[in-house]
Image (cartoon, rainbow, N blue to C red; front, side, top):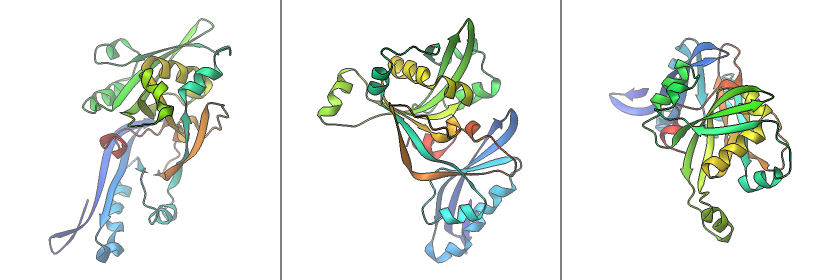
Length: 264
């Protein structure tokens, strides 16, 4: 969206629009990014945002609101999607579960073009997987959860990047090849993620040699996990969302966003 004055661009706001589902109902996502306006024309800024409200059946997301704009989003009846994220330390996780009995057996495997056809994933998820193939930082995984003879499948997607860390404390992680930070972008089931959180994270960090994992609170319905290997930290800025219909915040993913495109 452009704001013009005598054919000169004086403002810009990006809409990243995609199709999705919430509570198994088809919806649209509109992710906002890069809201920039010449100071002289700040009073006209809302013109850049107004068209987002005209998109039917839409969830509008803003994952990086400047602190000066946050009161405005609250005034526009945007809800807070997440203010806290949970950070998981793999070493503490493994130590905590050396002797503990696990709730279920969980097997983790990376989704690829070759094996996604053999899973029970929906066409919508297969499309999301295909859409993100160009982004080397986005990885999808399937978790097969087996308990008492029954089996459930959970799909998670992560934004992953190599940590450029140094210092003596990082030597053990480097020796073990654990140098990757993972941030959750998508979960196919909040219930499975909450019920088997430790087992799922244990399977993931050990299979993929992950250094740390960040999980935004919305993915677990803002449940206080109260786990010894999890640190709850305040986000640098809150995530906001707007919807004219009731939505399940745990189903709001952050694929098709600037977090993915810019590999935050």
